[in-house]
Length: 598
Image (tube, rainbow, N blue to C red; front, side):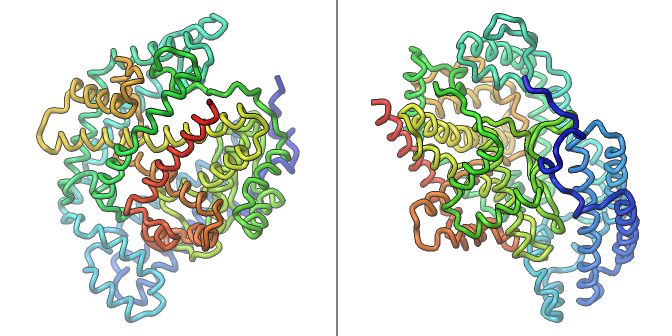
């Protein structure tokens, strides 16, 4: 096993270059001091933000100046420590900038309440008076949509006093799921007794040894079965809290409140659930392929995640992985590839694991920096795919920052996974087309199908469960453990079909899904993959304006509402067609796999 190097042993060319953000300690301290000065200057607008069009413009400009500098320091300090968490000096920088963030929250809490007191029509008159304010029209439109849901000063103050109480259901679940979990032990492939954790459960579900998969599955869900009454009370409390706050803020439902920030109609949520229901048969066929490929009489829930591939895992050096990606992404055009190459030559990427380095991978940057990508590259195909995924985020950031002013440079979460997934789809398409054996081709097609299964079908099953439970509470019906588990079990049976054994213990899976404590979020995974497949399919087919539309999307930031951005780029998401097309694409790939198996 290769020894993991200390940070000091990693060659400079394999690390990211953060000096364009902050040169050294003195530079950090100077920028931090300037940030505090700017914070005071923003606070000086208290009580005067909307005195006149000129004052509003000055407020926006000063706020931007403060945000750009403080955000740069915040991101730099966290990037800096993530590549070596053992360095106490790096932790000091984080603590200093976190302190600034705490003071900011306190000093600038006046902004939203103060601006909300002004009628929107009067703000529109200010925009007409001063042409420079036209830049902020969309930003103000989004902000004032919430005006109808802002309460009186007294009511807002009362809700503010409840902040220490609200959110405790989520916090308690997090403690249980992360700190107090004790699943006990299972026996691995070699028969050794090992501790089962949330982290290694996924590995055991991918084991080729079915006995290991079954033991891990049963051990994990027996824990949740034992805690079903406690967790059901936590989730019932979460549902009631969310529904109550939505009512207090004059929304018809928490679903409406959750979709409002992205200006997405509730009807769209119902529409995509129905679309998925209409396309369950191809999923059943894919699951039957899995059963046959695994050579089992019955497909159980613990058989759904194991890799069907019989291929040996090929290794790629970082340079080979980069070249593979560059070839796969050629359909995105010469300009995209030229801009992407900057990431490799200008040291955007921190490549390999080292002692104290944060695990996983991400892309993070600010308006005044290049995109930065943290990897823990190990040389397998997953590492190459992860690099492509994070560089997709990086290019989305790069183009949005290049083409948008500061106020609109950051893209919303509902659009955030599209560019990264386009890169994954293009890589999968390239590998499939260049496969040298039938087995290799089957592996890549199966990988893509499994991505669709887990990202569209599974996430929409979660989304439907959330909706049903919140609707029951809104209707005044009891939300008991029995109701929660029965509802989830029935949905699990619907989404997996009669040819898959919905093991009794799977009825408790809802208990361990952290996203249920961030309500009505998971549908974004399904819409994100659907949009990515639509963009990638159009580009690969060479459709007229397909590449131009995609680059327009990458360059849009948050300059319009999310679905409006997609519509300008050729995707009518609100119609549901991209989701429909994604599931038709899924069925076509199922047909391909069936043909190969013949």
